[in-house]
Amino acid sequence: MKTIPQIYAAAPDPAKFTSAYFTHLSECLAAIDPESVAAVIREMMDAHAANRRIFVAGNGGSAATASHMVNDLAADVARKAKLEVPFRVIALTDNTALITAIANDTGYENAFVNQLKAWFEPGDRFLAITASGNSPNLLRAAEWVREHGGRVIGFTGFDGGKLPELCDICVHVKTARGEYGVVEDAHLVLNHVISNYLISAFSEKAGAASK
Image 1: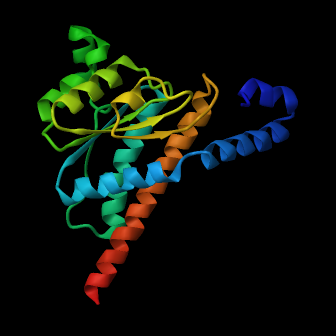
Image 2 (image 1 turned 135 degrees about the horizontal axis):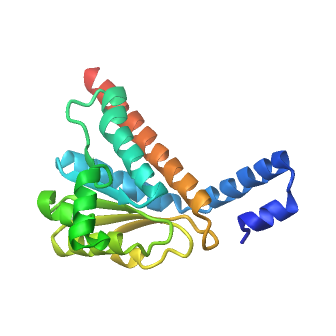
C-alpha cells in the first residue's frame, strides 16, 4: 500500500506529485465497498422517515467534515429536493463553549457523549467520523448510543481501529496508517455521494407525486 512519502519520493516534481496523489486517492475511493455506502444512505432515509435525529461528530479535520455534512444534509438536501421536513442533523462539533466546558470539567473523552445525554432519544443515529477509528471520545459516544437504543454509523480509515466493532454500519477507507489527508478527502467525497443521492431520490419522489 502506497504512502505519501513514497509517492513524493517517486514524483517530487509538484505537477507529477499532484497527478500521483489524485491517482492514489482514486484507488482508495475505488476500494470502498459501495454496499456499505448504500447501507448508510438507507439508514439516513429511514431516520428521515421516522423523524429521528442524526448526530455527527469527529475530531480535527473530521470535525470540519461533520459540520460540512450537517450543512449538506440539513440545508442543501432540503432546498434542492424541496423537502417539507428537512433531515434532523446535528453536529456535536459546533458548540465551542459547550465542548470546552465539558472537556475542561470532565475530560475531552466526554465531549460528545455528554451532549448526547442531553438530546439523544432511542432510535436516533450517531455518525462517527474518524481516520484511526480509535478516538476515545467517539468510542465512548458510540458505546453509549448502542446501550441506549440508537444505531451507530462509522466512517473510518487506516485499518479501521476499534470503532467498527461498535457500528451497525461502517464505511472503511483502507489506507496506510497515518494517511489522514487521503482518508479525510474520501470521507468528504462520501458526504457528497450521500447528499447528492438523497437530493436525486427525493426530487424524483416529489416529481412522481406531482404527476
